[in-house]
Length: 183
Image 1 (cartoon, rainbow, N blue to C red):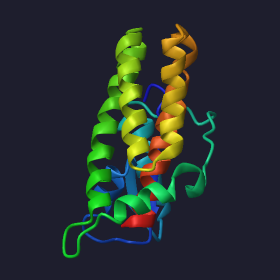
Image 2 (cartoon, one colour):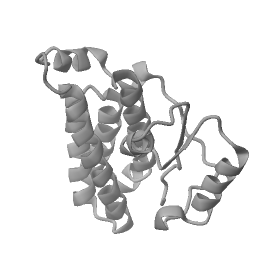
Image 3 (cartoon, rainbow, N blue to C red):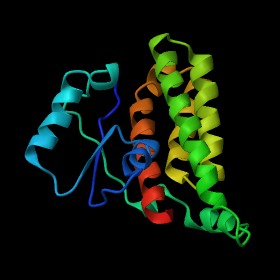
Image 4 (cartoon, rainbow, N blue to C red):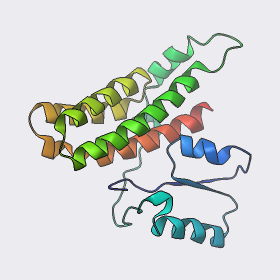
């Protein structure tokens, strides 16, 4: 979607709500294992044809895959988890759920700002992503957003624009890593 990489979750779980969890983690779609070729073809065709009203990303663009240790600051996460009170909902997961929703919206708006050549809005959005992700120990995302913010502040918006693809990729991978490690 305008630079967004299509991510389809494949999981051995086939429980009620798994699809929603995958979508909430930033995935575009979901199929359960064992993967049947016809199911996979159907999902791929849906997105190739413009599923969800969008067009899929060209296949030739490569995404770097990061390890959880590159994406996350476990000390920060443990610090938040230390605030957890017995019998209360998981504080870290509640914060991450809000972060995922808000950041998904911020990324959509940042993409719009790039299309409209609106550097002020773009800078404001990546600044928010930088701070929110740092607070939750989503360190690589914070660093990449900070890099984009610095470029815009230095009057180099054209150089910052391509970083949005990387920020989106890191957001998706970080969201998925957190869901796998902490839920």
